Every structure is written in structure tokens, then in C-alpha cells.
Length: 198
Image 1 (cartoon, rainbow, N blue to C red):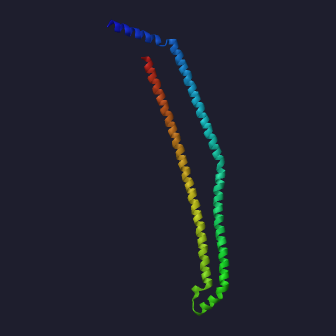
Image 2: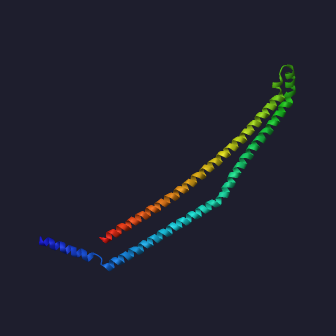
Image 3: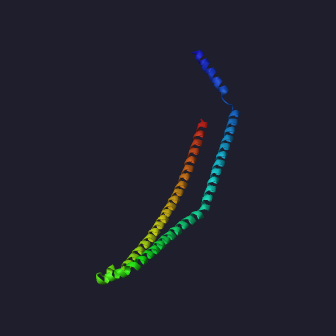
């Protein structure tokens, strides 16, 4: 038993010899504090650089907003102009077709109408009804284009609201994270203080 005690005593002495002195403890604490400060500064520098990069990227994106607005306006103008051109071209071709057909068939049809038909099958009446139909189709196309544009703007407004809510939620989560980290830091400091007092 005494040899076991002797061994324990020797091991305790060895351990005590390996333990740092008060001066060494202070030097270790000083080095740890410096390293901690260096890590904190590097982290802050990295986060500031990231923040700067985000600012640069968002500023560049803001500069492109007029281009996007211009593109949307050009799209709308082109859609409206295309609808107008399609309607104009179609109506012009129909005018030529009707004039060609009328020059041949109107006298013949009017003679037949006078002999057998009624007012409703008159070539003039048929042409009038046809042009009204084409006009209604053109109006409907323009209205459909207007509805599509209104839908696009409504979608853009919904997206704008979504982005605003996302931004607000991200700010709130960031605030909560910072508070959580501060709470953990305070708990760790309190626990360390309690440990050192023992």
C-alpha cells in the first residue's frame, strides 16, 4: 500500500510540475485574449468585406432597374404595336379580297337578291357584318393584351410585397440571432467566472 501511495504522490508531483505557474497562466490568458481579439477582428473584417460586396452587388442591380423598366415598356409598346400592325395588315388584305370579290360578285348577287333573296344575304350586308366581326376580334386582342399587362403588373406588385416581407423577416431573424449569441456569451462568461472561483 505504501508503494501505491508513493506512486500516487510521485504522479501528483509530476502533474504539479507540468501545471503552469501563475505567470505562465497570465501569459496564456494574455495570448488567448490576443488570439481571440485577432479572430474577432478577422471575422469583422471578413463580414465587413462581405457586406461591402453585397452593397456593391445591390447598387449594380439598382443601376439596372431603369434598363428593366425600359425593357418592360418596350415589351408593352411592341405588343401594342404588333397588335395594331397585325390588325392593319389583316384588314388591308381583307379589304383587297372583299373589293376583288365584290367587283365580280356584287352585280350578280344583287340581281339574285332582287329576284329571290332578302336584305340579309346582300353582299353589302355580308361585308358590313364581316368587318364588324374583324373589328370585334381586334378589340378583343387589344383587351387581352391589356389584361396580360395588368396581370404582369399585379404579379410584380405581389413579388415586391414578398421581397419586403422577406427583408423584414430577415432583419428580425438577424436581431434574434444577435440576441441569442449575446445570451450565450453572457452564460459562458458567467460559467467561466463560476468555474474560476472554485
